Image (cartoon, rainbow, N blue to C red; front, side, top):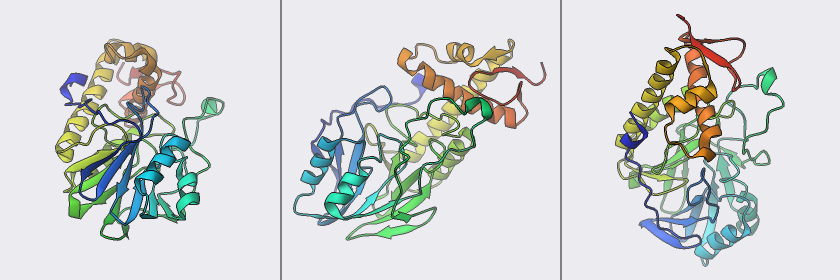
Length: 306
């Protein structure tokens, strides 16, 4: 499957700081932090009316915190939920908690999906928020209720080890963070992320009944489980393209990226390399691909039957 075969939707005209009602009981506010990784910026959600929850307060951004607080003026923020601890999602939590006294819910502090290999010990850190710690830790099936709303935690590791989606079954909606995005595929970058976990989490979401997916970046996805099936096939096709390149002989990751990501934005080449690494880690663990030493970003890879 080529990138174009995934029905991406990059139509998202929401402007930073504007409050938009997606459906009754769900509002969203866009942060002004656009980039190749965040699209037009991070989307924060307000759940309920009167006594409300905020999902993903966003990056360390005073203007966005002010916009969120302005959006709930006259209301009480009782809960803050965080899908995961990347710096574009969780650092503003402290500002909102200080202003509202709300209780913070998340899976836990940031952690990698696996320990760093020795050769990775001095590589730069990912965009992780290592200061974050929730007041209440939640995991698979935990339900948190507020005034007129009820959110169920769905564990979705892969993009990060502590990633959660929050399902609102009565609205047939799920706040899916960065695990599923309508405008692009998600980055899975070891050791922060894990392709094995990511694929299993896609299957978990696809098996649930919620239809409307509300992402951390970009527009809502109206047929979530159907869209997830596209993503699963896309990742399977990406693996096939990696194996096809290796069938021609051993290769390093930049060579595989050039063969597999035609026409990629040059600013995303490094991220694509880490997603290839995530696939290669899985293939090495399954005995399909071999490398000398640990499967790392600077390694050279070959098919085991070569």
